[in-house]
Image (cartoon, rainbow, N blue to C red):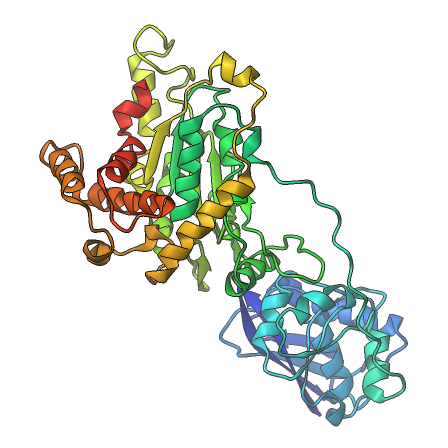
Length: 501
């Protein structure tokens, strides 16, 4: 007899519909899974057998063939245990085929018959068309976030089989769990001094501009960068679904029963591997840190300590907002629309500055500067030097503006960009800058002088125009004037200025 149960698996961050086909026939006892299963899928045989016997359910001593359709795509993870068990019981005649009509199932089985959640449950449920889904009880609220299915959440295999046979009702949904108290986010009011750094954070948040800060140790670069996410507006419903889907596929703990609504902040160590930062893998294609920062902030502290080849691999994702990972078995596209913030010392000793104040040799300084290539440096719209704050600023009792006040101005500036049809000013294409950035004659003369002296390239011109547009939006101005252009140029130091400022 043949039985089928709809299910799904995860490829990257997208759900892949899978149909579980089970055939039970006479012959030598055996259990075979076909359809390109990975190691975790092939091990389902032992988990399903132990779970059935532990739950007091029959295990057919016959020949069993399980097909994971479509057979041309590799399937991974243990989330197919539950549908394999239900299809096996149906093919063996223990369950009626009508009991599984319109029902999809996904979840991992424990040896005692318990049901466990798997990473990517949100994407898996979103991929199936069946009106009803059976998922493990711990993943019930995550599955309900899709909003298109009736979610049934038994605690174990025995409960699911009893409900399908009509011997017992389906257990009710578990009550929502109150999220644990979260510590207050870092506030910009904690930063003493650094008026240029605070302004750069505001401009970066308002326009979605990538930011690079250099300066000696202890100047406050990390302190500033970790407060950038708190200036961004809350995620929209669409952005929250995208962000939650990525974090679910990566196995990151989610807020109980709700979407991720705050922009994420990811700060990987400079020793992170290429796969950890960019995503991929051999067996399971998982998102990396740049995708986990989607719709949020990716903070690379000690930027000069990252391998140069790894940093250059970020250039295309920063431009396109996605990262494509190709392997022999599949090619996966991960979302990677994030705000990049880098912080680094001006040289190996960290002091930088003019000759005499730095202990590094000229060759050491040159090698350190080459770790961040020119093309990557050009991706940063905002580049500034963060000097150590004055002693008086550190000891003063008056706090600066808090994050909430600055976030209000950021939200207003983003609303103006949205009225133009762009999420942020950083996404205005070069072909439309002439229409949306109309500089006044004095501002045009400043740009012309920079271009003629070679201090600004054509690509740099576009980036300066976008930053000037953001500064004008923060001021509530319709046109970009000379002060806005000069402000944008002040926030875009060249590589030499960064090293000796």
